[in-house]
Image 1 (tube, rainbow, N blue to C red):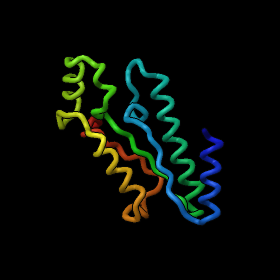
Image 2: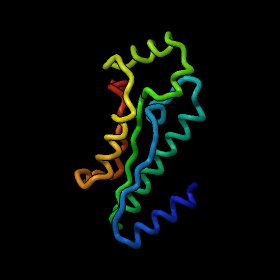
Image 3: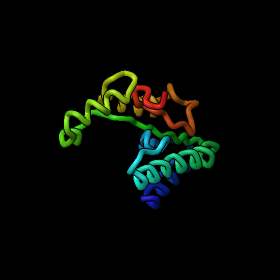
Image 4: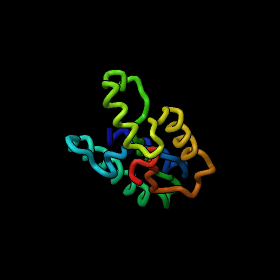
Length: 130
């Protein structure tokens, strides 16, 4: 994967501008019991994002990441209702996020409206870390 990402970054460097958006998770920010491997991989994405933001920013390329919390996706269909209710209670908004709420953050980061956002990791979690 890194080789492919490097090829894309090289193409952006040649054109003098670009935006790279990465997918992390709140678990990569704060950890979660029993998810050591997942937390480590998502924290790695954050380190990758911040490092490339420093390296590629001077070349006109912005690099950011989104760190979603609990999002209503089809995979949650396998989780018991009691567990889903517990997840909702952990979020100050007392609900799960919707996929379009995450997509909106990515759309913003890809837009010119975010032209001065570089090296950010935006948590979209309904306030889980508050």
